[in-house]
Length: 405
Image (tube, rainbow, N blue to C red):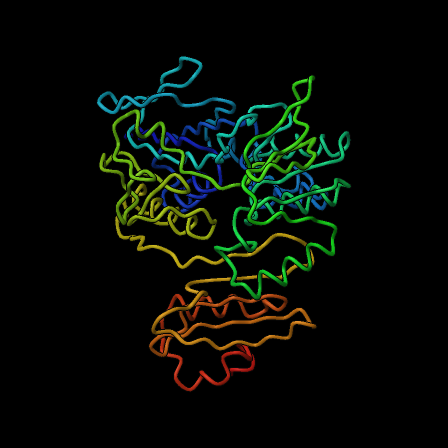
C-alpha cells in the first residue's frame, strides 16, 4: 500500500479549513494532514464576531469545526503554534516551539493582519484591533469596566465594532478620515441614510478627523485621542479598525514572490509548484480579497488541484458588501459608483429609509447599491457576475427578481 502524502496547512481560519473540507470530499485518503493555528481555538466563523460582540451570539455559536471534526478526519491540529520558517529545499516547516514538520504539499492560509496606525500611544493598554476572539473578549471586558470608546475607522469593521460597544452600554465615537461612512462601499446618499440610522442609536461620528496621537494616563492605560486640529476626545478603549494587510511575512522569508499579497496563479499555486495559497494573504491578478465569498471560491479551486484533479481555475470574483448590524440592511456590489459610459437608475424614498441605485453599462448591470431593502441583492449579484444583456428587463430591473418575471 502506497504511503500517503503529507499536506501541511499554515492557518486554521476560514479559507484554509474550507480548502481542507473540499479536499476531503474529493480525495479523502490522499493526505496525512497537519494544520497549524496561531490561535488557541478550533476553526470559527470570523464573520460572526460582530454578533458575539453585541451579545447576540456566543463563542460556541460561531465554531465551524469542533475538535471531534479534526479527530474524525485524522487531522493533526496544532493550536497556539506559529510557523516561523519554511525550508523549501528540504520541504520542512519550522514552528515557534522548535518542531519541524515535513510536507509534500503546503497550503498557506495566513490571512491578514490589522493595520495599527503608527501614532504615538498606539501600544498603550486599552488599544485593540478587531480581528479575532481575543480582541472581542478584550472589548467585552472593557465594556463592563469603562465608559468611553473611540473606534478609528468608519468602514465595515469599524461600524460593527462601534455598534457592538454601544449595545454593551459604552459611549462610542467613530473617527474617520473620509467625508462619508463606508466610502468604499456606498455612495453619498446611502452613506447619509446609514449615518442617520446609527446616530439614532447613540453613536457619534467625527468625520474628516485625523488621529495625531493616543494619550495615556499615569496607569499606562489610554485616556484620550488627540486629532491633528488639536482637539481631543476622552477614551478608555480605542479600537483600531483602519483596515488590514495581507500577512505575507512567512512567504517573504522563504523567498516566495510577494506583491501586496502572496502571488498565485489561476490554480492558486505560488511560483513554487508544491506550495499553494488561499484567502486574505493572496494576491491574484493584482487583487487581494478581504471578503469571504472569494476565499471560498479560491478554496474550491485549490482543493481540486491538491486532489490531483487539475481542472479548476480561479478567475477572480465579483465582490459584494453587507453590514452585520441588526436592523440595518445595506448592500453594494460591482461598480456602484458609476462614472463615464455608465447610466444609473435610482429610487429614493428617504423618509421611508429606502434607497436603490443600479448602474448599467452597454446594456449590462455592472453595479448596485441598496439601502433599506436588500431582498434582491443575490439576484443583482448574479446579473453582474454573469454579465448578460438586460434588454427587455431594463424597465423592470428596479422591481427586483419577482417584479421582473
